[in-house]
Image 1: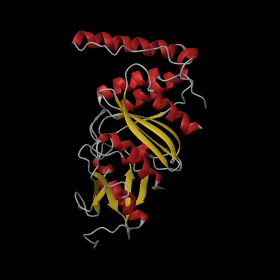
Image 2: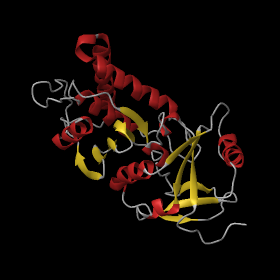
Image 3: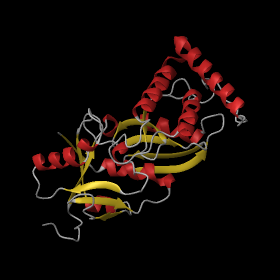
Length: 164
Length: 127
């Protein structure tokens, strides 16, 4: 599995300078909705992205109530969900489709999984902090990066490592 | 009666209550996602039959959720596996006998790596 980080970058980008007023949030929400509709209606453009977005929406439905896991989990964090949508839409087109799940503390996690010792995960914070970790045989790698408009290269190379 | 002190070789069970907690053959890291109070619930399962274990999961976890939820199984691991991650098992017997809490979680940035490693050493036991 090859991930091209240059030629096949996702052309959809999100401004990091979003407003915070109620009106700005409404406009942002509308823009996001338009993006989603565009992607899901254009198969050649974003078929696999549509799958990820659908999984995210399903996750939101399943985890929108307190204690959804029976162990006292909080409901999915709205900010984390919004950053997760942007993260998903910024993934290079040839990125394998990840699993998505929610932490009991409300964050969304993207997971590329080939086995219990061959996986890479990214936990998306509502403040756009990405905490990542991978297990590759007996090797581990973990750290934190900030998500702005593009997927950080360290994440791309770790996703590649899962499939190499 | 179980000892008040937990031994490193004791077995623990983490109930799987979501499809995201396991795959066909593996316990997934999601099963070990720490809760907001950072006390991850497990059960001391030594000397219990599978039937007794499922009964605890059903009555103490699933029956306290809205109808329609399922107990899929458990992830089984040793106390020493937990300790290897610099976490502690507190045999608190709260809210029920045999309940223990995995405590001592570090900063959030390290959680994903820890949950991956706990899942990697766990055995999947489906109901």
